[in-house]
Image (cartoon, rainbow, N blue to C red; front, side, top):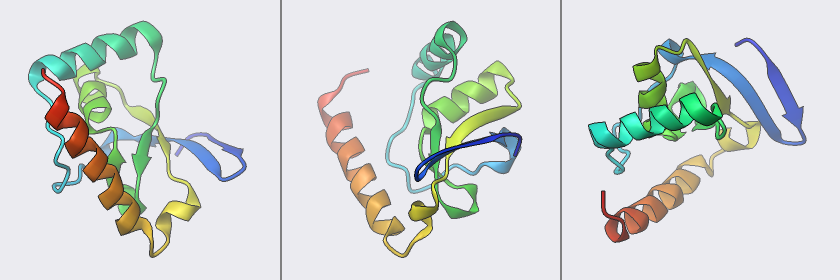
Length: 110
């Protein structure tokens, strides 16, 4: 971890891509075309939205950004690993996040 910036409970840290783990339960799947689009966005605007991680560096939100960063050959990416995400309520927060993605995915075409 290179740098941490704390704004209240929000903590943005830069973490090596190799230390992050994709969550196999993530229902949101990105096509190769979408990953390339995300990569172009990162090249144009920078890494604007950090990945959201759970304990053990498992990615809760941002799998597409993670894959795009890999495509770009990035070494580190910004993550939000706020301490309040490590509580017993975390699985419930993850389930709610995934449910909203499923609803969004069902109404979105690629």
